[in-house]
Image (cartoon, rainbow, N blue to C red; front, top):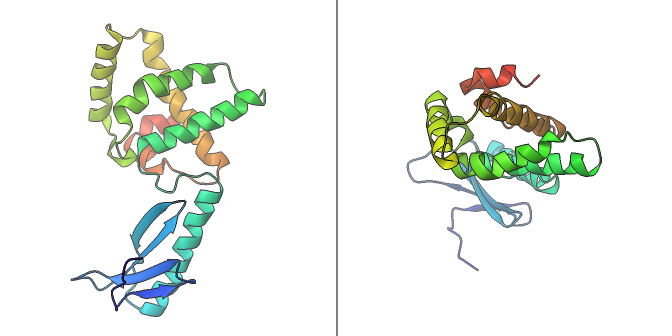
Length: 186
């Protein structure tokens, strides 16, 4: 077991650690949830407040893990996995749309390979233009009008329904950067 810095504060039976970085006045926290190391700022300068915030964040991350919500949701691929899981669940229970099969194919074949590791907040109009060119190259031809008019709005609507059923909104920053997607989700 690694040795802790003597200035590290351990709380919650050793599950949560508080420490300060060099040249920082606010406390940082570190803990493991679902075998993933999480290190975040508490945003607090006061130790007592930092302890409360660290416990709150630890509980929030545990909730996410217990409810199959990605612990880190900044990547497009994380949201895509959720979307596919929700579509599969709906298809298996008989309430899903037939088009969900096509959506899953689009996600696997085009969206995740292009956007996968990218932070959702960094997807902008220029990136969508890059995607259009990349997709045409992958397809070996220009996509038909029906392809251009359906996948992104349909997938964004489907993804938003996933986030709404889980009780968390993962794509609010994506909606802000791509207003036309938000208008197609209702």
